[in-house]
Length: 320
Image (cartoon, rainbow, N blue to C red; front, side, top):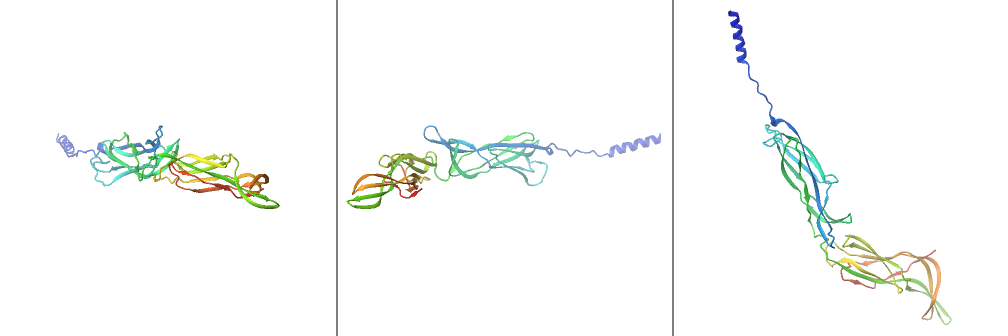
């Protein structure tokens, strides 16, 4: 009987001395992932369909830097029960479609995430007929926001950049017109008979009608790009470029320079026959090519101007 009581007493003692074990597990120590995603675009200038322009159209932006910062500790940190300092920083750049997606570590309680889309310096471009024309320099300011992220849940943060122009909008201009006119001649051999004396010299006569004259204009205000014009001479060798689209003098960003030329002309260098000062006829000469001639002196061609006597001459002939 005494032996049984001793065993029972030892068992009770062992039970009473056993220490209760507490679990170290906390729900806030459980982490998972969330995805921060979005789209980034900027405004561009486009025709408004009524002869003017608008700057509310948008295109997606590639290569923009996006970051997400999540603190390691704190009430809304990744590990709320921890005292560790620092933060996790995730980054990505937007793709060709302006999209980004960043996978970040979060928890069940919710973490505070600072999402930042960096600004950049660039140009406010113009798009005409799906062709992009580089515009003036502009600043595009970035943005940031704070979001509470929970593991297994995603969030979307988009940004629409709007240009702050360094200088004025190149399309806020009034479009007018200008005129350039002149004549085209060609250098021929002149044979003058006066009595019994024959003299040989040269003379300039008008080119045949419908000879093509070309002009390149450095910036068409409608296309924001160089524009090529062409016209033809009349029977007197006169040409006219009318209704050249241009802008007013002093408009920022528009030099409005014109280069006019006549291309190589395959023909013969003929002889003009004169009896004294009276023209008689033309004698066909050797075949060859009159070389291209250029007049590049027409700078600053602005609205309402008329540039006359812009003459060109085929003076150099290369026989076959």
